[in-house]
Length: 61
Image (cartoon, rainbow, N blue to C red; front, side, top):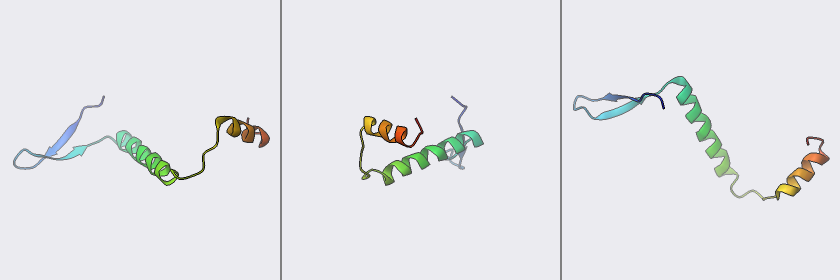
């Protein structure tokens, strides 16, 4: 796990976190994935077998 760095105010209270670009981008990707999942929560669901059937039909499997 990466070393965590904090910025503190004059009272020593943590006010911010310093992240590497790599960590920040990874968190952004995770947030995007969660947003997509939330948007699709009411989409119709198909079975795994139906998915394989469709992929085979489209020549993707």
